Length: 303
Image (spheres, rainbow, N blue to C red):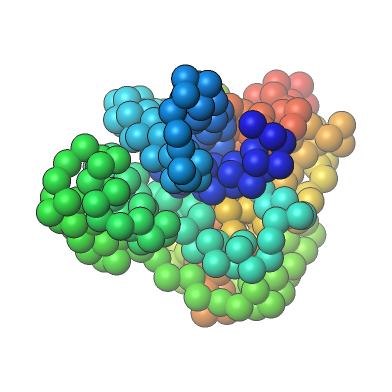
């Protein structure tokens, strides 16, 4: 396989695996295995008319198998589970990013967690990747009629649960700029004014870093908690906040002054307000982004 073919096929394969698994590291492993099987099939003399279709089928099946085993692990996860953050690359195609952003949002991926693995696969393959039902049936290992039923039930559930964050990129970016400026300045009132009355703050530490035990609801409580978090940063010498697009939403990477990552924050924006804030501090979910700080040690050192 040439490097050019790999570069051409990898984005679509990763797009499927990440949305299925909600994990960058697991998706990378699945995609790597998919390419290995493609290579073996060709080396064995198998004629493959469409490498893209072959790879998407293999990656979908591998992801489905992985998701079935992951469901058991998620049940014993410490605290709230959030997907691994996916930071946009500067060379990503802007049109493609805009087209796929909604299906990348943390809120959307969290809703998908409430589906069975088979429903999740059928829904994503149909609604996001526009696969025909006969291929979905083949991938999931069921009849075409049942594949339609799986997708329909999943669609109904997602539409009932899915938050709607409809805002232009300009509106989102402007609000995010004000949000992070108020947060860095410790402006409690300014921060509170940007939050929806029923805003939700979620944190994912996975039992490996200090985090919220459960979600916090309400403008005043969320604003106080966020400013308390950021004040705590001064206890270990402050932090550096770098704005990024994370899972198609406005976000930021927060690091110590040595450049080690502490947390990733992601905002859900609609109707001119911040509807949700997600903070990921589980170091296992940050390592793919670079060196990670040991938050517990930092806090103990400065307490």
